[in-house]
Amino acid sequence: MYALYFILVTLICCIMMSRTVATQMKDHIPFYEEMCKHLQAGETCEKLVGYSAVYKVCFGMACFFFIFFLFTIRINSSKSCRAYIHNGFWFIKLLVLVAMCSGAFFIPDQKTFLDAWRYVGAAGGFLFIVIQLILLVEFAHKWNKNWTAGTQQNKLWYGLLALGTLILYSVAVAALVLMAIFYTRSDGCTFNKILLGVNGGLCFLISLVAISPCVQDRQPHSGLLQSGLISCYVMYLTFSALSSKPPETILDENNKNITICVPEFGQGLHRDENLVTGLGTTILFCCILYSCLTSTTRASSEALRGIYATPETEVARCCFCCTPDGDADTEEHAVKRGGQTVIYDEKKATVYSYAYFHFIFFLASLYVMMTVTHWFHYEEAEIEKIFSESWSIFWIKMISCWVCVLLYLWTLIAPLCCPTRQFSV
Image 1 (cartoon, rainbow, N blue to C red):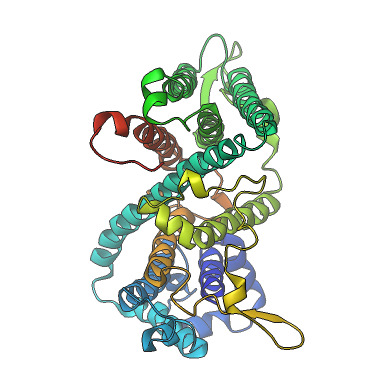
Image 2 (cartoon, helix red, strand yellow; image 1 turned 180 degrees about the vertical axis):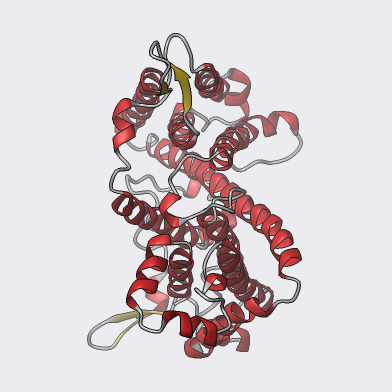
């Protein structure tokens, strides 16, 4: 239900940022201008569209989740009064969410509010990205540790580790080569060449550090599988950033401007603007929603606090993200009543942190707000241009790439820097 609320508000934000929807509404809704004047939203409802309207709606959604974050702190039992409020009263919560999103339009001194809220949104959006990067690094370590645990019982797991590592590095190297071919040229594109060199060098660096004797001595489970996965993600972010970078132009021999440093076939991919925008936006926000839901599990919240399964209790399996049979203690909690088996998974305690759940959705609200309004290029932002070239989007992706590398490097060298502390990764 919370995810549905999130999707509903996100769709409203996309509609508010859509030039196409605004034009269609103006052309096909009778008495459109009279309705806008009656709502005191301007002659053409300009107060209900654009980046300022999205800021206000997302302010209401962010406040909604932040209040619930404060309200659900330290809930340890699903039988408490606060837990009942968290798990029910959905219609009342919907009314509260609508009231908070609508009330944001009546905030006095709109200019000061928008300027201040923009920086809060940027900080929250970037923190959301950092949390996803932390969980990605945790996922890489968990993958390698799980499959390594299987080698003690069956040597075939060594083959799976080698195959997975080979595939990941093959994808990373192929991506680097293709970007060097399509995003550089012999007599230009210096900036692209530097970025590809730096990011390729970083991938080589983390691979060397992961298998260095000093790291292996403190972390026997460290290997090339983790660094291969991180390298693939670095190459993906590099490609995404180069695709978002404004194109470079030069004069040819006929004194005509030509675009360089971009694939020639890529210049025709955005002809059907509405199709690209609709499909791309759907995929983007499905990924955001998936990140929210996977970030709020008990495993992810424990990973952020540095709590991991011990190698002795690790059970190797191909689909290691799924809980193996028997982990849920179903014999104690299962009740069979002639049909569906009901498992009381919150009989003793909550299965996930309610406060952490709402905090992640609070950050996701800020991330959606900044993404839809093109981060710091908000004045001319439109949902149809969400995948257009922008320096703000380019640098957000590149910084995310470097932060991911730094986080992974820290998990490798932290035991060397702090030898007296215990690190479980």
